[in-house]
Every structure is written in C-alpha cells, then in structure tokens.
Length: 87
Image (cartoon, rainbow, N blue to C red; front, side, top):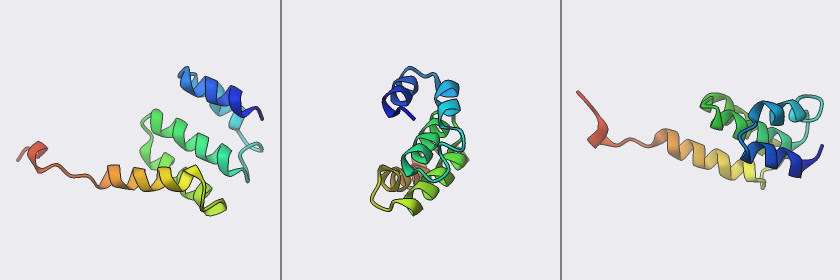
C-alpha cells in the first residue's frame, strides 16, 4: 500500500480510487488505512460511517491521527447554533 499515492488521490478528490486501494485486506488491521477510509467517508458526507471508522482506528492506535479526528468529529456533531434554529 502506497500511502503517498492514496494521499494524492484523496487530495485530488479521486475518492473511489483511493477507497479501492484501501479495500480489505489492506485496511483490516492498519489504523492509518482505516483512518483514511474514515476521511474519505467524511468527505463523501457519510459522517456516521466516518465516525465509526475513526473509532476503529483509534481503538487500534489511541495516539494516532484518528483519535484527534474522532474528537473533532464529535465536536462538530455536537455543535448547536441557536441562531440557526428555525422554529
């Protein structure tokens, strides 16, 4: 698995191609691969899937980028702006 290639595909919004390179068995027990699948899911708007993947990656490596991403995702999802509330 070439991390630089996957990062480049992600940055170029070639998400399906990046996902294909990360498909099992490549992502089975690799926290970075699972984290990247989470980033792809988040970028595609599948926030629940992304959080689940961040949780899996953080469980494998608690000090990884996934743990930070998980915390940020929870903060984003918990944000409530009462000024945007439309009764």
